[in-house]
Image (cartoon, rainbow, N blue to C red):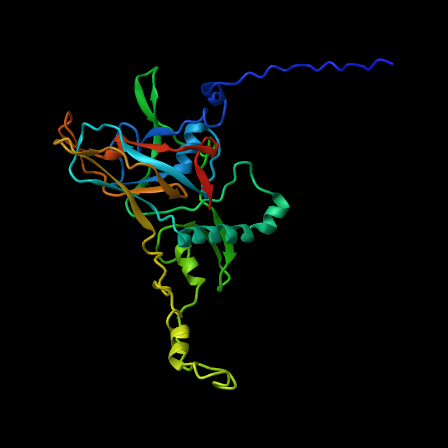
Length: 326
């Protein structure tokens, strides 16, 4: 009997070009850069600006970007021909173990606090755990887009409460007096209060209040029974030199959680730094204090710099941008 011959179907594999791979993908369909301002076409209401990275991405791309991540981003100058009277410093929360531990603990406490309620009612579609910050004289910035029909710029916001919202998380509890307290989570670097938990202050409280040196070194039984090389000096060295950490453990630096990540400058002489370069920003929070240092030559008067700044997010796998879980 003749053997049956199985005909194999050939399938032609066509390689996609790099541009074809990008089209329609998360990275290729994501707005990652925008001008930012406190308010459009008007002078801002505060002398300092606070960039909330996740919020800007939400508004530009019309989708939920979660705050509880470390975003890779940079801040740049939109008009490099302008002259800044003094270098503009840009700050982000320090991307260190203690800041991230404080953030992680805050989320753990929140999840635990609402666990019973969540088991009953679940959570809303766009629910997200968010930590706020209320730095003095700082106002949130928004992405600024161009309206080609009217030849104007406008800021994108959440709109009214019925249209959109960006809320910081809080928990409700009963204090010692029996009164109901509603507290939100803040990354200010100050003492907690009746209305807020400062995540760095609360994390600092989780450690020991004082570090005690051993007054008496116990050598155990059968003193020196195994030889004569056992020295009290060695015991003291092993137990005392290193019983305290090489930093101030009793005062975790929650009061200084911000670090400088870059500087922007533009001078008439031509010395300019028009971008910070990419940096890692926990929670996507970036602080720009005292930005009212800009002179726009054509206007001949000082003008707040936030109208002239841009923010850019590095391309990555989290909905088109680079972001890592805390």
